[in-house]
Picture (cartoon, rainbow over the protein chains, first blue to last red):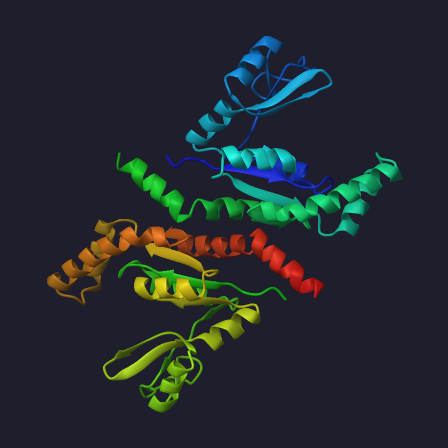
Amino acid sequence: MSQGLKIVLSGPSGSGKGTIVKELIKDKQFQLSISATTRAPRQGEEEGVHYFFKTREAFETMIAQNELLEHAQFCGNYYGTPKAFIEDSVKNGKDVILEIEVEGAMQIKEIYPEAVFIFVVPPSLTELENRLVGRNTETREVIDQRLGRAKEELALYKQYDYVVVNDRLVEAIEEIQCIVRAEKLRSSFYGQNIENENR
Amino acid sequence: MSQGLKIVLSGPSGSGKGTIVKELIKDKQFQLSISATTRAPRQGEEEGVHYFFKTREAFETMIAQNELLEHAQFCGNYYGTPKAFIEDSVKNGKDVILEIEVEGAMQIKEIYPEAVFIFVVPPSLTELENRLVGRNTETREVIDQRLGRAKEELALYKQYDYVVVNDRLVEAIEEIQCIVRAEKLRSSFYGQNIENENR
């Protein structure tokens, strides 16, 4: 069987990357990376589906044994990305999606330089502003802060392999599927599978 | 307007790349590179469609002025690939296909490192043998020579960006279209167009 890809997906707030990921994973070819956390499961959350739930001690052992791709504390709880789940999924031929902010993505680049880095952008800053205002969940001040941050983040597209402009959702999803298909046609990928077959 | 891509397509004899190219260029997005030659036009051949027909003197001037990507003599006539036609087509947003053997492709890589290099391979050497035998145009000796050459050429896939296995024609064409679409989503391509817009 061919190995899967590791796909790192980032984008400024309001780029719509969350919706894209939700649509993509309807195709069982894709597997969303599952985080580990020390926070208690909420109603309806399942072990190994929404999170890997860990005790503080178990989480700290994972940190000590370098089993996490990255981790952070938030509201007194640990959150992190277990490597083993990603690597097992890829070996089983799944294309694993890591939805992560820019700094996290750059850390992952150091560990998985072979991953495919995709940056999702809104069609324009004006469109982004409309989306943020449309949500009606943030004050104007927060929106301006987010726009400022988005402007800075947009300039980071060069750190990524691909840029997908999320103008129409259907098209953005097709484009990502196309990137994945093309990446599997890379000569390095072909060589890797030839060598596996000859073992 | 977005610039087009330069696409270099190679593959061992019997890989079916000729048929793939014929199908691809039915889509007006693609433009086949047109060669220059000193040989006389044959019945039905049109200037600027099948070839650019040149006098020996004009061809030698093109060589001297470095206007050709590569050139060779065959049966006393010159054949070559004019750069200007490729570059103008790309500027006009066309994706230009150069169908060329491996050595020629590697020369082009030095001049156009930004080109997309695609290697078309038959599903297996057995299948290639069947195809060559099926053509019924070559002796067994010639077929064995071609198979030997194909084996050597297959090993050159690492020099290319992508490998397309021509198992089913429709799928091979879809894959190349997908590669072209994905290449246009590259962050370097996005950056280039952003900069063009801001001029």
